Image (cartoon, rainbow, N blue to C red):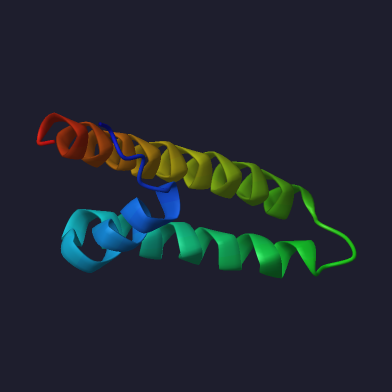
Length: 81
């Protein structure tokens, strides 16, 4: 019988045990903070608009990488049952 582990539990496990996942999460948080700073401005100049797009793309790429790591550990756990 397969037990489905919630994604949040897998994320917590990776944060605790996987250095690469922690690095990705920290970088993701950094980009999130930078985007928050930009969103607090009433007006973005052209350079800031470009920076915002770059940060969003980088943040999404990191999120995808983190998601793949979660899925990988999920498969490993299922295979070991």
